[in-house]
Image (cartoon, rainbow, N blue to C red; front, side, top):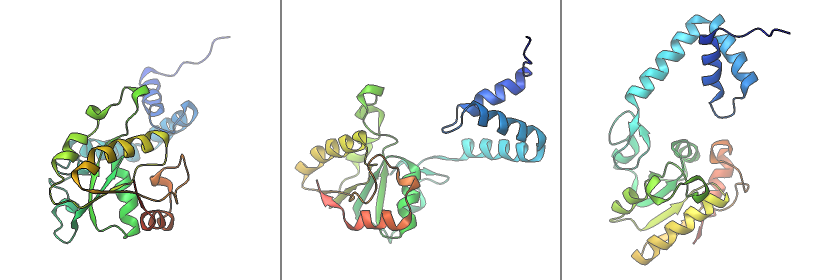
Length: 198
């Protein structure tokens, strides 16, 4: 039996959509056909992706994604510069900001230590973190409660404690294996309130 093959541009679109997290081949196919049937949506999406890729960069201070450098949080003189919250990804800053419980500044690692995946301290923004600790009294570790998140928090705690900086960890109001991105504001707020020393 001869199976119908997709035209190459459609096959390429499906293949690229399937590379997105959480998108399998079937969903990628449905999205591709939708985009082909909605040319205006396709054009707006393509334009938004191009503009984001062109205009979004990492903040030179905290490494969060921003369209201005330094970012709005780092520029805000009302933020407590003595309290610094370390997170895995830029989306975690958004999740924490929604709670309105943390009033300090952030540092984004862009991942966690994972020797099995070849991710060591050099692949993260740890060296930038260590350069910005002057005047910082507390560092809050807000990594996801995974094995890698815990290992990263402990690694950083061992680096920071000898400097006389208080190191705390957000409480485990978040389920083990869960992500900050998917937690509700109340859960994250309670986790921040219940943070503990490492």
